[in-house]
Image 1 (cartoon, rainbow, N blue to C red):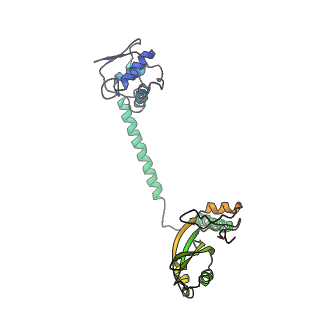
Image 2 (cartoon, rainbow, N blue to C red):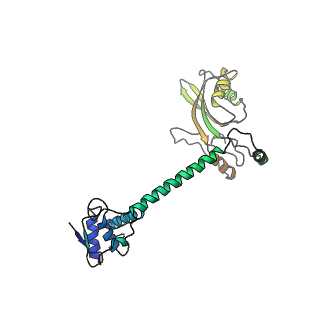
Image 3 (tube, helix red, strand yellow):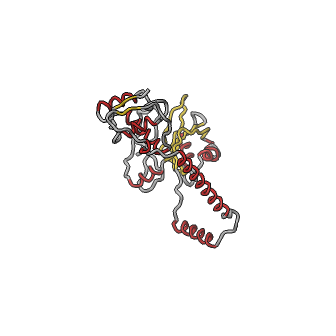
Length: 289
């Protein structure tokens, strides 16, 4: 059954917009020549205020650009407009579309063949040419001349160092801990934390250069080995945090004031103090400043 629309007035456009609220196309369940008739009758794209009409218009416009519309439809009448000549609507013929598809297929096949030919010319196991050797030497020389050393990451570690019993001299225990010297190891702030039954443990902060120091090796080969194991029964890692290189670079150009010990947090963190221009992991708390 044919439907009738008027697209030259606001009332007609509103009626068409309401119609398209519940219909994807003018008639039927696929784009047809009825859609082309209404599309051609619109002198310009509809206003965005007509949401459904704009959605339909953009959809038909896309179909015309891609593949065209060939379904017959049930018939539509446009009030106040001359009959639409089907040939005037820019719908590409099916034969042209098919020909274009074959042309694209041939183009892709030709490009793939060219890539294969280029791959055949590459000798992965052949000897290096003079030009390649020269380019390699130039890159090596440039890298050596730059003298840029890869920046190693740093980590902040909080250790619990536990004594054998309540008779252990905690001052000598701390001296034994700090006596361990290694490249890339920086001891920081420390404090004694009650454990129970009169026993206290040493909680100490250290900063390490990741490429130079292994915390596991530090504990197994130094802290819990002779002679430090005379005072140290065991060690636990309480916190292990990577230090952002961006943060390190920022510290080098910013004069930071010393941070105070935060006693309000249930899990207390050691405040850090980094000397500007020389990030050596120096750490201290409020009481030791």
